[in-house]
Length: 375
Image (tube, rainbow, N blue to C red; front, side, top):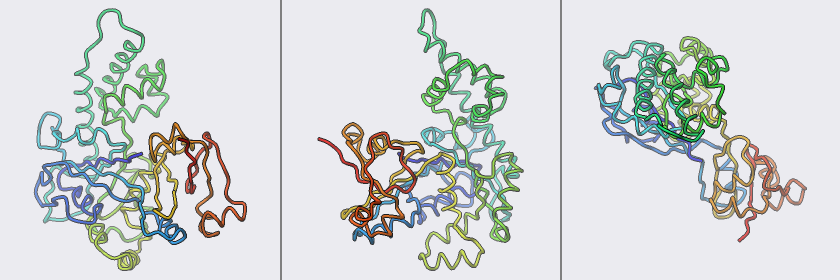
């Protein structure tokens, strides 16, 4: 399962600086003028996972393949982007496949960095959301009402589209009503099966139906004190859940990204931080999207694989190779903790910590797995 995060925001709020830090190199142009990013930047970055190093030592391999996140950074959106202002709207198509939208919001003061429309995190979020809503509305308005005798599914699809249009015309994001039983009722969506609504949204790749994260880009001086307290304060300001907000200084993250692990740890300690903002961002994305990892460990490599919570063993096998889902027979499974504590496959088997599970076994976070696949 590929996890793709689309980075959006106004110009000069720190999107490209964040992207550079994510890649651990300056691949995106971070310049002090609007529209420095004129092509979408796409980068695949590893998910921090200290378990893999220990697994590699146990099975005596040097090949480590972490799970990955794909980040897409597009040109800054400005007010009027949906009508062609600026360049950001041109690249919205590049984030339509993203699983989550990451809003980068500016809360730092720097007279050397132009404020291109940025006012405050709350106002900036409203501006960007409005442009995404207008972009979705344009997508829906391109849909043609079916004529004549049509099947029930086609008729329902059009009714769902009509209801979603009303949501957007009321200046609301689709995600804002999907998780509210009252609001779904207000727009007449309760008469449709949730699967039908989800399918229509997915077919049209609607931006405002996606999960959202919020990166608050603060100045270095603002990192002092409790990050948790600041997270709660910004969440209240934006009217969102604290679990979706990540407070960080993108410039510091860019500096941290090029340091050795030892220097990085020391720098974080000096700043009074337990974890880098980028690590918190990826962890937050996993949590919001209800994702988890299972692990494979052998002489050739150790690897982390991303799956959704509730995934069965058969479906997890299909993540490794599509044919495995059909051909899977069973799975040998142990926990990461037991695998390390008992020095690998042989050890967990000797102490009775290795079990055989069938296709319908529900995978757990940190399962170390070896699939038995038929021909």
